[in-house]
Image (tube, rainbow, N blue to C red; front, side, top):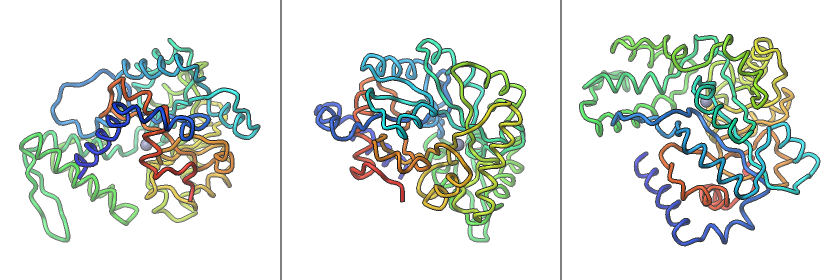
Length: 352
Ligand SMILES: [Zn+2]
C-alpha cells in the first residue's frame, strides 16, 4: 500500500512537471508562502532497506531547494516573521519557512552549514524526551529490528505471528505492516510496550537511539544561540496528541515548551504536532495549542499558506521535502502549490 501510494505521488509530481500544468496552478494555488517540513539532513546511505528514507534529504537537495527559492525571489523567513506577515497582512513578497522536526543532530551538522550558505533562518521543533535521552524513536527501533532479523515474531490478536524479514522486499512489507499497526494501537502505553518487547527479543538497544541521533540539552543550548536557529516545541514524548485526554495533550504541549525554554534560555513560541496528520492533530488540538499561547502550530497536512491562514495560526499546513522524491525538477512543482492542491483536494484552508 505504501509503495502504491508512493508511486501515485511520484506519478503526480512527474505529470505536473512534464505537462507544465504546475504553471497553470501557480496563480491560484501558490498562496502567499509555504512552510517546508524536514527531518534528517545527511549524506545518502547505501543500505537497500531504508523504510524511513522519506524522513531524510541530502544536503545537496536542501541546497537545490534554497537556490530554487532564491532564484524565484522567494524570501526565507522565521516563523515569527511568518506570524507577523499573516497577522499584519503583509504579503508584498512570497515567503518560505523551513522547519525541522524532532531535533536530530544532523540538523546541526549538515543542515546548518547549508542554511548558512543562504543566510536562511529555520526552526527546529524539539521533542523534549529526545533531548533528555529517554524518548522512544520507535520507527527507527522498528527499522533496526527488521534490518537485523530474518524473521520476527509479533503478537497479533493474542497469538504470536511469525513474519518473514529475510529479503529487502520482505523487510519493507513487514515494516509497512507493523508501522501502521503500531501507530493504530489505541492505548497510551501499547506502542511503547510492543516496541520494547520487539527490541528485547532482537537485541536492539532502544535507549541508545536518542543519544545517537538527537541533540542533547547540552548541545541544544549553543545550537539555539546560532543566529539563524529558532527552537520550537514538538511535545514531551512524541505521542499522538489526538489519542490523549485533553489534559494530557495540553500538558504535552506546555510542559515540553517549559522544559525547552528552561534548557535553552529562550522563549519558545512555535509548535509542531507530532506526526501532524489528521489522525494526530485536529480541531481539539488546534484549540489547545492556541490556549497554550503558541503563536503558530504546524501540522503535516499538505498545503500552502494563504491570507486566510491568519485565522488558523495553530492549524498551519506544510509542504514535505520527502526523501523519496529528491529530483530537482520537482522543486517548481512543490513551490507552485500544484502538488499540495492535488493532495488536499484543492482546498486553500484545511483546519477542521
Ligand atoms: Zn516528529
